[in-house]
Image (cartoon, rainbow, N blue to C red; front, side, top):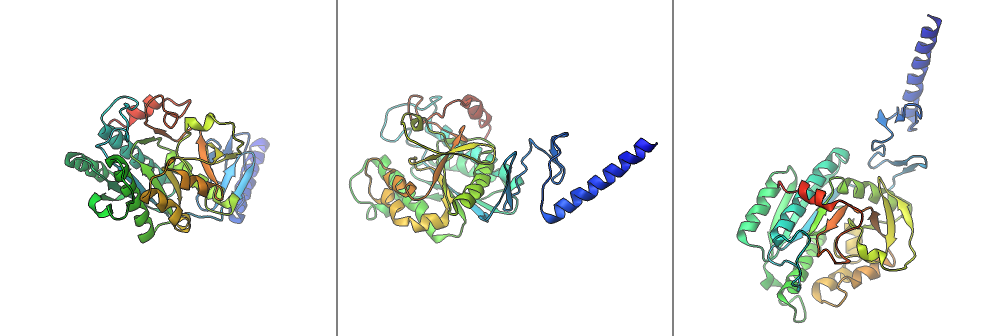
Length: 338
């Protein structure tokens, strides 16, 4: 009986202590039960709190000073061009529209998952399309309609860009530039906090958006400035002997990089502050096309996830494609039913 009374008293004081910790904003860890009683979560769960604190065991917490209010995703699609100005086949050797459909589906599933964690921010996905077949546009609209996410489809009239884009280019390059031009114009004219520019050949993991949102808050707080985040761990990052730094994100490691393709997440403020540099890619093509981005990365941190959060569906031999050490056939198959 005495032991039982002692146990009851112990549980009573433990509950009081937990309540006090919650009131003053502290988290406590029960290493015996491998849980965080102040959050009613296991240590293996996501224990960071959006907009408030990033918690990494055993390093403790970082109080978030950079809160996120909204995310606008601009999905640049074109189902008529397999690989721009190339005759190569992509991984899995499907028609281009199949990559577009699965990429869009994977993004929507990732947004739905993120809404459970970041429930207080607003989401929108805008599809900006060039040269897709009418039946493919119908399919894109159908995929969008299956998800409770604010969405819009914009069919780009390429004739409107003949005076805006200087030089002579292949139809594929011209369409790509016009699409980016449209995307940048949307950012400038519409309200948003974070912007995620995505090409239509990136298959995302379910947790991709959650990891990027948590990590953006954390890194922007650490660096005291908004950052750029990539969704992919590109193979070409491993063929150079560049120095880098490794950071802990939410559930992934992230490495500091100085190059990327034109799929990235950052803030509207950062886009506006670097608008002229970014618009260079939309008005005049110079190799490498991404050079203006690389110049921006010299002053604003850009980070890439390890392992990858998405697969760039290029040719199997492309150093800009398949991220290493991931079962991407599994991710591809998971997005078959769109």
